[in-house]
Every structure is written in structure tokens, then in C-alpha cells.
Image 1 (cartoon, rainbow, N blue to C red):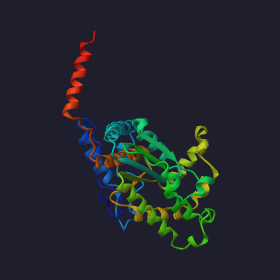
Image 2: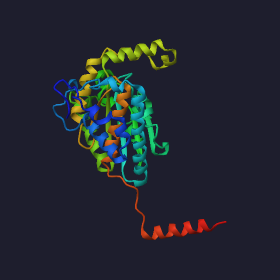
Image 3: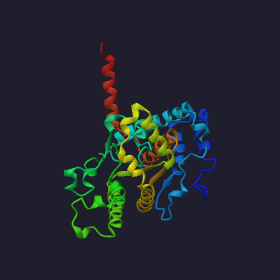
Image 4: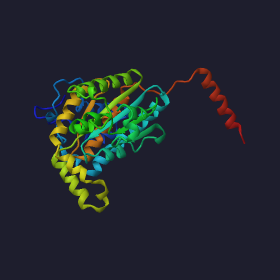
Length: 326
């Protein structure tokens, strides 16, 4: 997996992604191959022994990535490759991709979505942010509101938070469970085990119907979250991002980390993996997110549809007619 016993990546990223001169000389598929190797470092699939503490919040070598221009240039190359793959996905029109972002507050979900998906055609992508369920949503099963926003074939769906909140915030605050209109006999000690099994089965169902699910956990440290909270308070333009509830949830940090570790261990599969992305450096995290999405798109074997010989002949005839116009 490329991790040391302490979860630190040993000289892996510099050897794969940091030689910009070399990277610029790569063709699209060669770059995607590099991206896959980067993503695989953070990929979790069928790991019954998964431990969150084995994954660092930081990149192995932040010295190069701290150069913002360098990081931005590398991200732009990744976004360009992602745009090309998304165009093939749309033309291929058989697969769909669902990208789920989960993280603690201030981990950088909004920024990652904004920057990584900046080059994608809006017609082929939909972003849905899930807040606390409203009255209508509470009258349905907890997957209902997410099902309504699943991507069509040929498109990318992005969930900013998701049905995983039902085994995160609801698990940490079990009083919420009591307000979800469930029959009393269904609220039992094995409810989290049952929900995780349902989620795993749901994602297998999506896989069997041509929708791949990529799950991104932005792994931010408690120290970095504090730094970002203070920045939001001290910067007037960012005051709107902070609320009193953010501080309240911070008090349950250990409970959330335990819940994340458990759900990743129980729902990571080969076809619906988790990527545990070090998120203390936003620039680096965005590069890894782009690599993870490229990894999934590349696994689909996408290509532009091939036309028949008759269609080629028809196009040539139309071309001649156009060229003959005055």
C-alpha cells in the first residue's frame, strides 16, 4: 500500500508527480497511469484490518506542494485529463460515476469540489449537498433523498455529504435516531451493523447497474481544523462559514473518528473503494482527489463510440456538399 508502519508515505509522491517538466511531456494516458499510482496509495478496498491512525493527515513531502503555483499547475493538468475522460464518459453513455465526499467541518470538501471539477462540462455533472433531513425526507427511508440525485448514465454525480451521515452524525448523536419516526422495535443495538450492511448492498446494486461509487474521506487533523476555524472567525469574508454548532461537534472528535474508521472498514470494496486523503494541505488534497476520480474513470475502459462504414461515407458526402457551397 506504500505506507510505513506509522502511515507515512515514503518518498512516493515526489517520484511520481513532482517532475513538472517530465509530466508536461506525458500524453493523456501516461498521465492517468501516474495518477492511478498516486490514488492507489490512499485507496482502501476490502480492508478488514483498516485503522484510521495508519493514514497521515499530511503528505510525505510538503516542501514542493507548498509552492502554490507548482501545485496549481499540476492540478490544472489533472483537471484537463479529467475533462477529457468526462467527455468520453458522456459519449460512451453506459457508465455513471458517483463521487461521495465525507469529512469533518472545514476539511475542504467545498474547495475540492470547486477546484477539481472546474474543467468538467456542467451538462455532465451534478453536485448535491445534503443537510439535515427535512420533514418530507423524514417520512421516507434514509436512502430516498439520495436516490433522487443518482447520476444518469454518462454523467458524474457528486454528493457533498451523503447517506453516510446516517452512520456518522446519527450514530454520534443517537437522540437524532429517536426523531426519525422509526418503529421502536427497529431501534436496537445492531442498527448500525444493519445500516452498514444495507449501504454496502446498495452500493453493490449500483455497481451491478453500471454506476461506480468513489468515496472520498478528507482526513484533516484536529489541529488543522482549529486553525481553519480561527481563520473563518478572523476573516470577515469567511464569517458566514462558521457556526456555533461547528464548535459543538468538535467536542465529539474521537466519536466521529471511531465512526469513520468503522464505516470505512465495513463498506470499502473493490468496486466502491474509499480514498483516505490527507487533507491538512488543501492543494495536495485536491490533487489526490483528482487522481482518485481519474482512477475510477480509467477503470471503465471508456472510448468514443465507433461509427459504421456507412456513417463514415455519409459524413464524407456531407463534407463534400459543405465544401461545394459558395
